[in-house]
Length: 127
Image 1 (cartoon, rainbow, N blue to C red):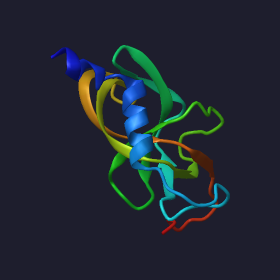
Image 2: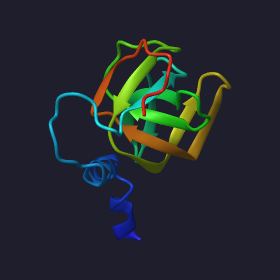
Image 3: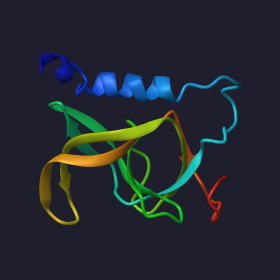
Image 4: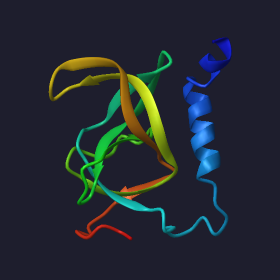
């Protein structure tokens, strides 16, 4: 059981997601993995393995799946359209949802580790 505990660490989760999403190529410009998202929250935090993880809740433009965008950026507002790039995967965390006032432990979510993020004025989702 102790070995499984190591996999719940946010650092290891982030490292695993980063290794899964590694790619070669120029760091300038956007890759085909870029996604247009609509922020459904302002800056917020979740808890994973007793660590606070900063970011935003978002939905892919035109989609229903909810993501937690893991980033320390704090310059965006609820409703902003952003283009993000980075690896993502499933995780469980402790979440307080402001809109419902409900606290949940073991909440299943898709976490996207943001490598690159900027505002998007483009109303159409990126490929």
